[in-house]
Length: 248
Ligand SMILES: Nc1ncnc2c1ncn2[C@@H]1O[C@H](COP(=O)(O)OP(=O)(O)OP(=O)(O)O)[C@@H](O)[C@H]1O
Ligand SMILES: [Mg+2]
Image (tube, rainbow, N blue to C red; front, top):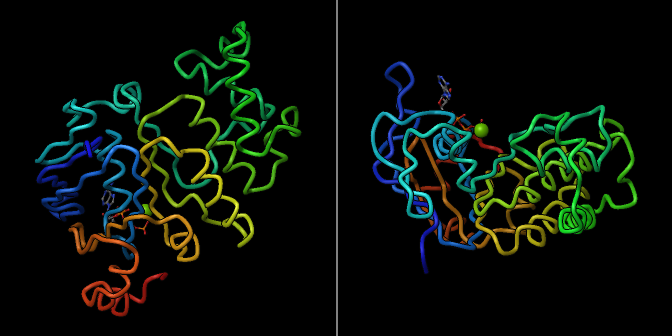
């Protein structure tokens, strides 16, 4: 299976503190990987490195055969890496469909994107996305009035419409009800079926629902990797979670 993402000896320090140390991480094309780890394990920092928000001290990151080490976030996103930060990040004053349209024309200004003349291919794509995120009947609603879960789904739709090959989701179910969390699990599996996905998540019900293969980070290092069953039976993982009293 071909690798879409690979990090080699990735290391980053914040004033002498190693947040990620000598990390070798890789993701197969089309895979959905869950990244676990106690607070401060370096999960978000790893996502920051992959998306160019943080620059590594050493090591490299290959995406789709391109060396993206040290590249700017905008250029990495143009190569096909999409990211959803924790918490909704949408335009509250605009309608649901306007949010999707703006994301579609991500490289234009908001104003230009709104007045952009849609061709039928774009309309089809936007409708497809609205349907997938279960917001078709609410397409003219003001985004700010959506529920917390719906806002998160709208943002996932805004990601999908940009057609990224690799999608990074940092705690997509944070703040959701159990029902919304379950629906999000279904949505992610369905929405990003043909894509490569990295999900950072603490909610174990969600992890059980979606996980194929799991990576566990601890103190900036790779602690364990395997199926969820292997991870749950891993004594190193059990020790860390017991000691840190982590979420899981
Ligand atoms: N910009 C920064 N400057 C200084 N220290 C940082 C910075 N970003 C992260 N850190 C530190 O690096 C470590 C890893 O943080 P990170 O946010 O990656 O953890 P995490 O695994 O995402 O944790 P959580 O589960 O709480 O989200 C923490 O000790 C954090 O304080
Ligand atoms: Mg984090």
